[in-house]
Amino acid sequence: MGPFEYILLGLVVLLMGLMVFLIFIFKQKQQDNQPLDTSDFKGYMQKEFGEFKTELSEKFHAYSKENHTDLDDFRERMMSHIEKQMTTINEKVEERLSKGFKDTNETFHDVIERLSKIDEAQKKIEALSADVVDLSSLLSDKKSRGTFGEVQLYTILESVMGNNKELYETQKQIGIDKVIVDALIHAPEPLGDISVDSKFPLENYQRMVDKKLSPADRAVAEKEFKKNVKMHIDVIASKYIIDGVTADQAFMFIPAEAIFAEIAAYHEDIIIHSQNKRVWLVSPTTLISTLTTILTIVKNIERDKQTTLIREHLRALGIEFDRYMDRWNKLDRTMLAVTKDAQKISASSKKISRRFKHISDAKFEEIDLSEEDDLEVE
Image (cartoon, rainbow, N blue to C red; front, side):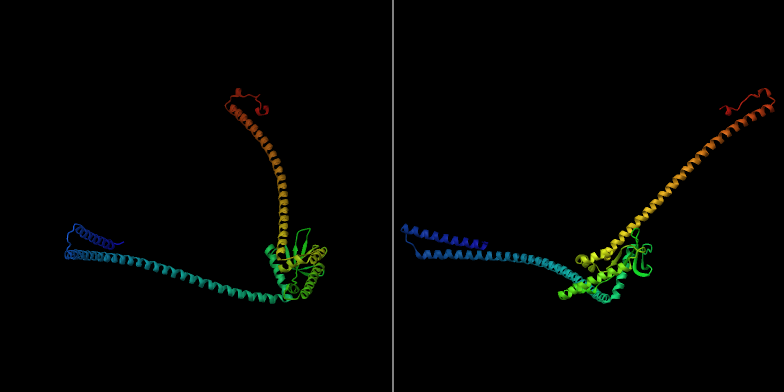
């Protein structure tokens, strides 16, 4: 409740109290049987009400003036506060807008950069697709497939064994018939020279795994695929395993890991046939492992040779050192004998010098003709 309401309530209470007081006087006069002058009472009430009205009007006027002043102050304070709040809000809004614009700008630049990378990747994918198409067209020709397999074989040999002709040779002629093998690995004994021939049975494999073909067509392709692989194994066994020239085993290099995995996982009859012919099927991965093993064996053999050579040199050096010690001991004994002879010669020289001095001084009586060699006495 505000101040105005309190003042109004007080005036109402005062007016009610005045009316009660007048009624009390009126009743008191009735009890005292005093005549009541209605005109006087009316005048009195008018006078009191007028004074009350005047006083109430003055009070309202004073309160209105004071309230107006307070209202102006309140309005000024509110306007100042609102202005400060609006300034703060504007600053925050501008800060948020600036930050949002900066973030939006960075995001926009990031999106542009990512779009450029995506565009670049798309170009690379298109180029790769073209390369894949070219590779597919390349592998569709048998001769090209053979060349591709040979190149991959040579790359693996060079990456594992380097360009060392003592470890392997490519396009090597072997045997009386001078047949040319793709690669000949010079493995240590008892392995010997191992022939490696590259084969790429692709066409029937692709038909065999093509889901678009009917099961009957895929079964026919599988039968032809097995026939082709076994034929390659037979050719390698008959041409590249030569008694007295090569090892009794050879490698059939399959350039495609998928084809090798298909044979190893689902065609046990091909594996058994290759084992019977002593032609081991290898993929790029398994060939690398095999070559690494052979290279490790070669290095171990070379290290053992060097160890044996070092032991032989150490044994010869020990014999020479014993000879040196024997000669040194002989030289030491000789040097001791020479030292004693030198001492004897020195003693004789002193005696001769002493006698020459006595003779020179004519002191013959001091010459002791019975003087013996002290060293000989020792």
